[in-house]
Image 1 (cartoon, rainbow, N blue to C red):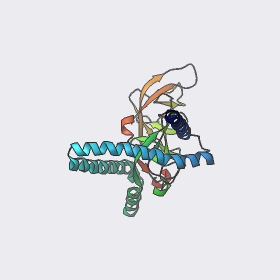
Image 2 (image 1 turned 45 degrees about the vertical axis):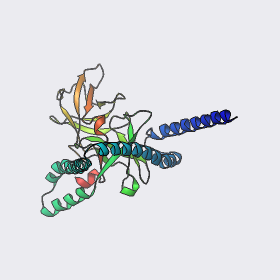
Image 3 (image 1 turned 90 degrees about the vertical axis):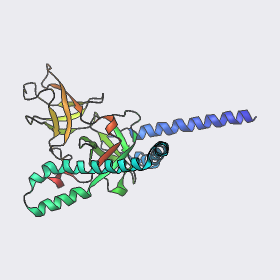
Image 4 (image 1 turned 135 degrees about the vertical axis):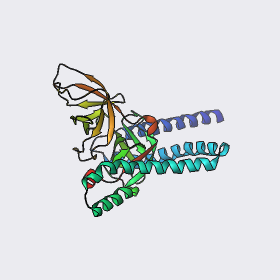
Length: 278
């Protein structure tokens, strides 16, 4: 009899784990602009669990490293790393923004606004169905996050934007490699304009470039144009790696993102809209 009860208990636990996994998969798939109340509720309930499991494993790893290595050195390096990320993002935003202002008063006001709205965040989970579409971070409405806030990696490259659902302590990020993503961009050298979206394979496609266009080359950088009202101009997004001629109206252009998966652990959310910067 005890063996039968044990078998039933194991079966029940397995079923519960499968259900939880399916729920987590379903809530991590971006649903476009309209997010149902059910999805928001499920996201709010289960994203803390995901955060908890991630924190548990990261905590165990940190404990192991700190115990067998120099704890003080680890802490100092972490502090310096966070400070470097913060300063790098400030420089990225200020580089072009300051050129828009002329008076000392306007520059001081802009400096304070940018400094107060740079929020370092950590990734706590990826889209289980398709990890190149979205991820979840450990900050939410309690930290002043809202929809369509720009997200950068530690080097100032564009990663994506915040999308619904956003709970009190977690938020979802739509990556630029998502096929439903759309970023207004220009080429760095000739200012050729187009729309960048994911190609479904971890890269991006530069769309709506006419077949007659001759001002692009492989190796050229792609930057935000600022025309979509979400991202400010001159943020680096990627690099053109292939240009193919087609029989249609537009070229087929492949772009590699500047960020890599290993750069997505520590990110920065800019809690300020493009129109407030420029």
